[in-house]
Image (cartoon, rainbow, N blue to C red; front, side, top):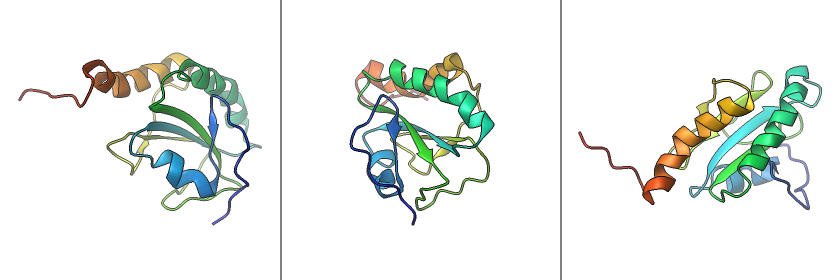
Length: 131
């Protein structure tokens, strides 16, 4: 498996490399939104400033990780990226990952995360729905 060196420092958007994928993305205590990208991809470059804003928006939520993964120089088990950018949501309860296909703007991402994370945070634990 290919992997870059582990970054010495991280920003609000966590840069995940191949050797750290399991530790960061598969962490069962975290909800993780990952952007799999290629540095030369035009759509990825356009998304980059929005992704940075998203990282800034969630920097104070320790159980939410906004991450990026350069899929041209890193590999991870179970990750098959066929187009760039590929966005995947890895919630605490489903580390198989779910394709994100919502709006690719800041409000779209925030709405998605808030709908999928805040429910648990607001109740202080798992959501109990009555049948």
